[in-house]
Length: 121
Image (cartoon, rainbow, N blue to C red; front, side, top):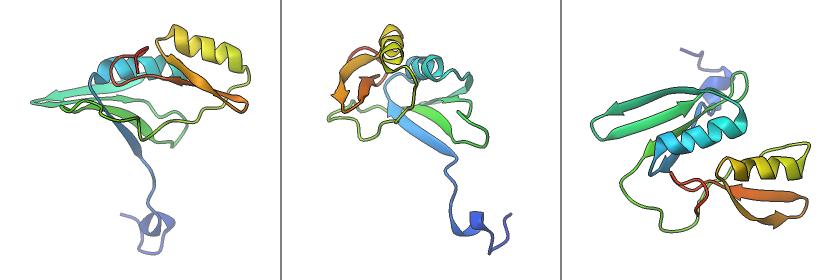
């Protein structure tokens, strides 16, 4: 337990980022390949289905994917900003893994993986 005056006690640490989706395994597999990290584990218990990646950096947050019954109605409310040195090559790789090109903004390119269906948004 942290001391009451420690930074952890005062400022919470992000330990996990969870994405609600239709098919957690498929989405975790896409992001695992794209980010170059392994899948940490999968939990199926009753109606719960959750798949988590290993942290993307030391002491970094875990990215998890959790199945939810409702479908996506509007655009995604969250995205990950990624840095690469070879933008065109990285964009092609994301598409090869099943992502969908979603446009170019300034010197960046966006590729989306939909909820459980990489390649369809």
